[in-house]
Length: 336
Picture 1 (cartoon, rainbow, N blue to C red):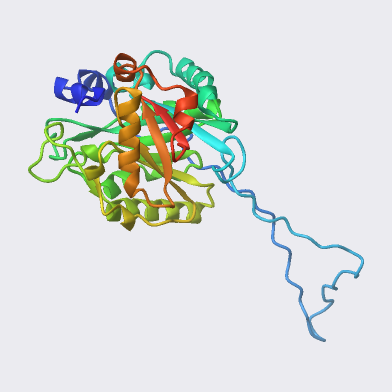
Picture 2: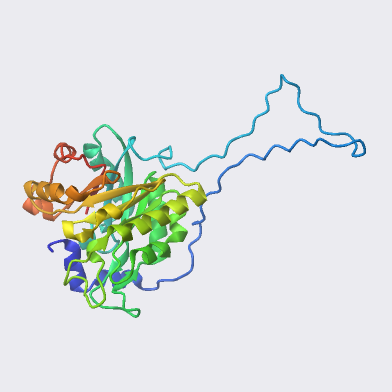
């Protein structure tokens, strides 16, 4: 339990308290999904009768009649499918809380530029797709008014990060630390954002605790069935709104954090990524990666997390060559 976020939680999360001041439930402007362009349907031919007046005649054989197919909304850097074209590379964090990740430090646009520059080392010949992983549901050591041990960040902060992702042709992932709440309820809370073509989710099950448990005192856990419920919901949004593939990450630091993982099934339109969160020297991180991936379903894509501070102290930080040399090769590489 040496992750920085555990220390931030037990310290009381004062930075978050400042961030939440003045939080409003009002929906920010500009969050409606872009409309899908569609051609007007061609009129149906009318066979008519002797009393109905002139009928619409079919076109001559030498005239080509076409209609424009519906245009799918694309990913920020083109296309509707993420792999194998892209390598996902991201920073995680929460503004005003440096202990929760690199993205919470300094100017947001500067961090995204830095992310893209650093990510080139880890791209491995792929096109880079930047990822801003924003901690949107933040776990606490105290229950709060609803007893769920978690808080939602202001919607204005989500909008700021979505705007930054769009300025840099990246995607936004809403990271969820649910406390005692259920993952599916927390994900549905963000539906207005998830119908956007460039917003996905990252689930943090080590913070998913049961009744009677306190986050930070025990490791939380989830099940493949609970993850599958979220994936099915995201797939329904993709289908309903004609969206490109949507990313669903689940972080895992220990094999026991996800039980019955094979219950997480494939869902069309949803890219499932298992990000291994091991911390420490490269040899230790590789051992954790190998161990945790023993239960990874075949249809789940591997991911790997690096830590700016802890890995540097215990490390060195693994190079792009070392990370891309892992088996299986990570498709999503995240710095905290």
